[in-house]
Image (cartoon, rainbow, N blue to C red; front, side, top):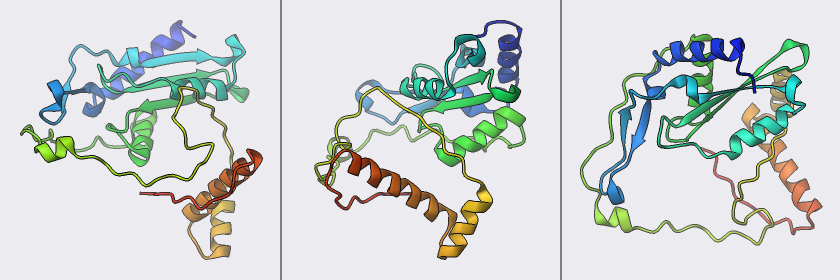
Length: 219
């Protein structure tokens, strides 16, 4: 990890940007036994600079894939604003990478991309003030209800999740992706899902698993 002038500069930069992003300064506060909905509360003692880790690949001999896997394997600490940033330097050609890890309660995929852009270049305006969830007690039926999940087929990838994570990156030109979509009369998102489904099918075949229909929910 780099703890010199470069890390000091980036932590100062992060502190400046988070002044314009109130959602990055708030943490989740839960009531005992969750008798009321969790609330967002500003954390005046939190230092945004403490959320940044700086790693120099050239100094440690690690790969970017390893750093990403280790970052996403860590659980987000809900005792403070639920996000972390990992700056990875020393990539080929003088490049660098910024990994933003945030709890889903803070941002989904699209909102996370906007948040990352705001931290990097500040071009995205901050969102409107977020209203706190209602503080009235939850109905008993809501607290005690059981979510019925459909029974999954016996697949080797359908077991309990472990803490181990692996990350790989495949780069595809956007123009090529859009061109393939036009050829098939579908959207670029459809092509992306087809690529994932094909890779998943090949993985199951390599494991010797039966290829059974598997439904996927994509919001």
